[in-house]
Amino acid sequence: MSQPPDVFTYTFPNRLTLLVERMPHVRSAAFAFALPAGCAYDPPAQPGLASILTDLIVRGAGDRDSRALTDALDGLGIDRSESVGVMQLGFSGSMLARNLPAALDIYADILRRPHLPEQELDAAKSLALQDIQGLEDEPQAKVMTELRQRHYPDPLGRYHRGTEAGVSAITIEQVRVYHQRHFQPDGVILAIAGDVESNALRDQVARLFGDWKPNPPPAVQPARNRVGSGHIRRELDQTQIGLAYESVPMKHPDYYAARGAVGVLSEGMSSRLFAEVREKYGLCYAIGARHDMLKDRGAVVGYTAGRPEVAQELIDRTLHELRRLADGVTDEELQRVKAGLKSALIMRQESTTARAGVLASDWYLLDRVRSNSEIQAAIDGLTPTMILDHLHHYPPKNFTVVTLGSEPLNVNEN
Image (cartoon, rainbow, N blue to C red):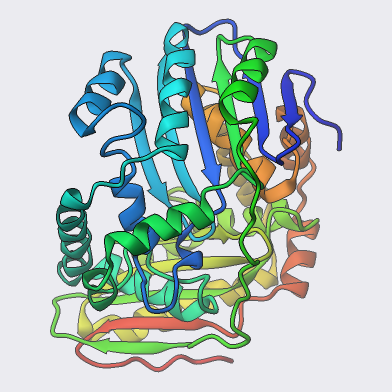
């Protein structure tokens, strides 16, 4: 597939890639940095280290202390965020397009010359520990976090905040070593969308990051085995159920068929899980499934919850609907799914923030950027036969199931 003509792409000698999409009809601009330094790179004895670093890194950089840095970012009107993924750390922001050059100057300091102040470490650790402990009060988040850890082989399923023991033991020296080791340009993606000029941005990025020396860390080596299904015993009004099974990544030829299959299950109030399990039998309030991806693998991930006395029937009927997909998909169901996928395609064109995120995600997952016409053609070309062929090769089976409640449930694999 060819690169969209309206997306400027340039990879610098140090392997940092700049992606720029000009959107002349808007006044804003957005950027998204993606650095290969996510929680999968946390040392085994220091889970949560990448997360602590991401918190500390915006508490002073370059010639600005924490207050001055915050004031400078606020003064530019930047709506910013920091995120910790499995493989990547994300730093993004949106603002008026005229303020983008100044914002990039500041982020060069943040990424390359952070203060990482020792006096702020305890506050960062306290926030992380609150999040970890808060999982115990959020049953849905708890069961889905546990599901990810059990379904994907370590370190691909890690909770980004780490563990209480790991976070409590982190030192400022470890944070600074992690930054020195993992913040380097090889594999970094900088995606920008808005009313901007690509050549000027290339020159600025060359000035800010061109002398950044590459030093890529060793590749993450996932474990051969995964933990598998399990039960967390707790007295709750609702038994929480999370499940996952293997699917395909975005690079796979079956990707859109996989998305179509999940859409039949869980796209709107006419979807099978909603109509059959929730409405027909009244077994739950919330139920749904989504397609989850890493670069080299994918999964279908589902969630539901119901009263303990109906929880076994709930999981049985949910698994029945998953398996029943292979019996056939109707044209009406497929048209509904196509409409939903096209709506998502329109949404990704709505804002500069969304566009910058899509550019970075596509480049990471595909090593290229998809055009809207390519996606539209793939959606339009979906047929029931394509979905059934996909389900033949990737049937719902070998489930990882995690339950949270008073009693474990039986999982019928037939």
